[in-house]
Amino acid sequence: MTIPFSYVARNLWARRLTTALTAGGLALVVFVFATVLMLDEGLRTTLVGTGEYDNVVLIRRAADTEVQSGVERGQANVVASHAAIATGADGQPMLSKETVVLISLSKRGSARPSNVIIRGVGTRALTLRPQVRLTSGRMFRPGASEIIAGASIARRFAGAGIGETLRFGQREWTVVGLFDAGNSGFDSEIWGDADQLMAAFRRNAYSAIVLRLADGALFERFRHDIETDPRLTLDAKREQTFYSDQSKALSTFITWVGLILSVIFSIGAMIGATITMYASVANRVGEIGTLRALGFRRRSILAAFLSEAMLLAVAGGAVGLALASLMQFMSFSTTNFQSFSELAFGFKLNGAIVVKTLLFALAMGVVGGFLPALRAARLPIVDALRAA
Image 1 (cartoon, rainbow, N blue to C red):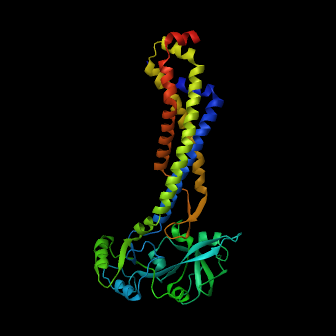
Image 2: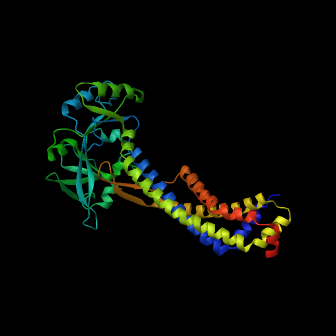
Image 3: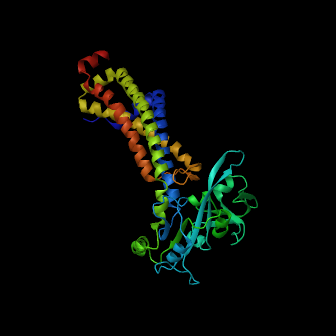
């Protein structure tokens, strides 16, 4: 015979205070575990969403980031003549020669500085990045000391609001517009005219070239042509792949720190669950003897107490997951270890994280409840009935 599930649920309800305290400990661990997964997913989504699939980024060979890269003007002109590049209505190639510089800006309300990416772009930049759209003001004029700022930058840094000015590269730059990049990495950048920024920072080479292929299927052929051309020392990557690679170091750091914290907390939570279940067994010895006398076998007792621990874990997991879901309304900023610039991103919850979190909670319930359940199943009938 199998012990009804309703019996298991009623036992947890009968010990409401103990159940609530144990579930609360489990919920805390699940909250930490889910938050780490959500933070990593938010980072990945932000950086992968920065790139377009049909766009290609070209940087200097062996360079890991745009900041480290250099593309000579002559090489940029060779690339621009490739037949695989899409052309606009005016017959010109869909290509943006860009320069990327790191500057230090102070945050609003504090003197604490942080690195921010200044990106010099060409006239095709907005066409190549459809996720970037102006929300107020206007686009900067080519040849002028004007810039536009990402929404995240405008909120967090002094002087980055529309109509304000920033001083860098020995010039005063006026913020003439704000843009929204759909929660991608571009939200943490400031854009201006590439030629003006190169002159201000005394640079003779671009940092990267961003272009769109006429057909995404031409990428491998295009990459082969670029990387084998003796006139060029460039690597070609799909834009999504390029920005995804930028998240690896920070993602690894977040994952390892989160896993270490989750393991430490989960050990405490499992010990708490084990103590709770052992106390439950000790208080219900007579009840266990009665169940055995009624014909329930040892495996039924084991399954009942193990189900009780798992139900407790699922309840704690659901609460922890619900609390973690509220983190989606918050944003987080930190230094990207690849580019050494500040990157803002949010917490993102998806179905895979929900499944992983609940399985993690169930695992804690099984580990914490197995030994007490085994003890309950092994109690001799006679001794248990005497305790009744």
